[in-house]
Length: 225
Image (cartoon, rainbow, N blue to C red; front, top):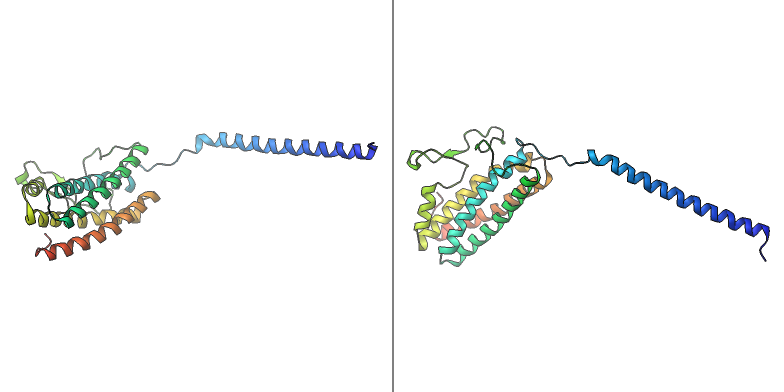
């Protein structure tokens, strides 16, 4: 038989449990309400159209796509296993990186290319870095450093054998070296950590490829452009 004291004890315990559950429920409700209140102000801050992040992703995407184009030519036409392997690696890596940059631009509600058609304005003091294809190309078209002209691309397509291999290595080496300052500037000045990390990866991987291409040119009795 339960005593008045034990009955009272059980009653106190039950009340304590009810109060504890109620407190937890109130805390959870308060946390949920707090989150709901903060939602309108919790939208991520995306980089502006004139930021280093946006400019780098726009320009480097275009720069990369030309590298992919040249690498695909060499991969399809070369008979040298070393050249074909290098071309495949470059095309695969730079296509994947381009996809990331274009994905970020979409997320940031920015166009894939600058609306002004100007390159490298996001780099302080970048005036003069881009170059023109010149009168022989028809109307002058501004290119970023290291990029091949339409005449050079046509020449690459026309070559075969060792001439193709050497010219591809020369164009791609110049292409890598031309894009390096863009990646270095983004690594130091981009506001988004993912952009800084990607730029750092580009510098490291392409730095290795530069050394490989210099060695491959020497082995084939050729020099950089």
